[in-house]
Image: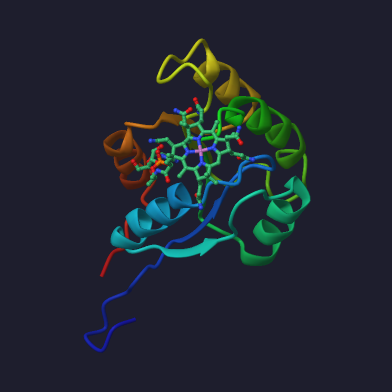
Length: 146
Ligand code: B12
């Protein structure tokens, strides 16, 4: 609540890479991007084991979880992650998205999005789809409101 009596909402996001991915600037970029939208961001970094991501989500109860990967193994790592993640009690419905350079064929998707969504992700974004990501965040009601 502000001094004017206006209710405030600060969405909390967790940003994580996948277990095999050691790139970090993508994570920093996504952190700043979400902070600009008013999010409190917990960036748990690169080469994150599935168990660490699960623990962090259970502890911090995020409004949104963003997985970012650019090393080319993103699709496979994300498929492995989602099979585990969605079966953890309490994490069945937390909004979870993945994006970046998910394969080794540039922006070519070859069914990645469809398969990741069928497996339990709420949305999948190509590296150049930041506008679409912003729209997703807004539609979910996850823009900070003063
Ligand atoms: C710097 C760099 C490294 C550094 C990383 C240092 C660090 N601290 O991060 C080092 C040298 C360590 C490195 C290592 C490797 N790298 Co490298 N690396 C790069 C490089 C040159 C730049 C990446 C970068 O920092 N970009 C700046 C950030 C801000 O941009 P970004 O990562 O692209 O993220 C943007 C988008 O992808 C998008 N995005 C990302 N995540 C998400 C999530 C969502 C939800 C959304 C909406 C958008 C989104 O938004 C961001 C802003 O636009 C790229 C080539 C390139 N020009 O992209 C290769 C590149 C990513 N690397 C590559 C590879 C293969 C590797 C290695 C596997 C090489 C090797 N054989 O060892 C290893 C990785 C090992 C591992 N275990 O992961 C490949 C990946 C291949 C692919 N995906 O097709 C690339 C594309 C080079 C290439 N053309 O082959 N790398």
